[in-house]
Image (cartoon, rainbow, N blue to C red; front, side, top):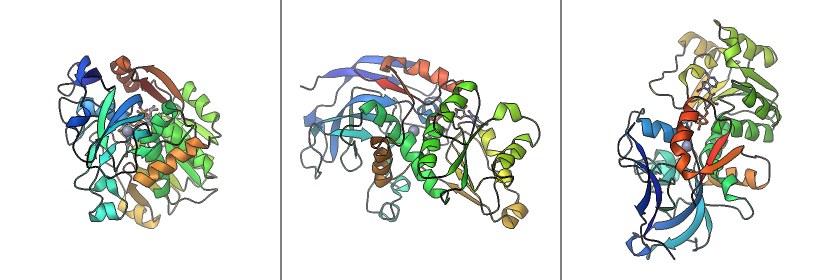
Length: 355
Ligand code: 8ID
Ligand code: ZN
């Protein structure tokens, strides 16, 4: 039985109050449009992107009022009439950032669904997973493998997918050195595990003993506390030193702060790749043209992943190769989680329980 009202966490304007609405309208099956699916969200991860959305610090503002959230894991409770899909009521599914795309344009045909002109984003252009019942789109929901607990699947749906795809963009070979900057955060701690799982040698950069310990448990080769190497050029020298004195083959920047981008082009070895993933506001990557040419460096942006990346990322978790570090809290805690996240005080991911 689908209730008429449920709990949702909503804000009416960026930086405005965050309300826990216990009487939020639940879209009824008869209100769904073809292609739409009603999902009972049971767990949802909190991504730093949700915090950017609330602050409104990116170039394009989110819709308001907004129910954020894009790491939703739950079950299908209704499918709109006239929808062609293999999904069934009762299936375990994930709501990822990319809620929908046309699947017919050049970008979609090439597997770059995120850059589709008609892309819809969960918890940004459409309401997301910080609610008990969310409307999403049949063609972009991700099936969650049997036996993978939903609270473990949740962080994979954005953080996991994104870093798995970013590692593909890094063009590294097994045995290569890969730096993960922002390594103790939601994206970063998963990036370290995916990187180790495919045989890269991993250097994590972040700060604090909690994050150092977390990464040591994943077999990261080295942890560098960036706060201990604050001086001019010191971090660059340290990163080069630990990577055989030559620097890493790739650097995946998953930090939510801009400073992490500063040194990366200088510590990469020749032919190295900087993969930009973290989205600090108003940040520029400064590349010296001479050294970019002489070291033959590459800079690539990587934006979430496609439907296949999502399935692959979940499969690593289902096989136990990647284990999100999660703390489960009630949905009502969202605002408190934002404050902790802003202070960099969340190792791994917070997952909210929506029931
Ligand atoms: O598709 C994408 N490209 C995508 C997908 C999902 C998220 C991009 N993102 C973006 C988010 O919007 C955010 O800007 O990636 C960034 C990281 O998201 P997150 O992992 O969810 O954030 P977090 O859990 O707060 O972790 C950030 C980590 O960065 C560290 C912090 O200590 C924290 O552990 N950090 C910071 I802030 N400054 C750093 C620095 N200078 C740093 N680590 C290394 N060096
Ligand atoms: Zn995200």
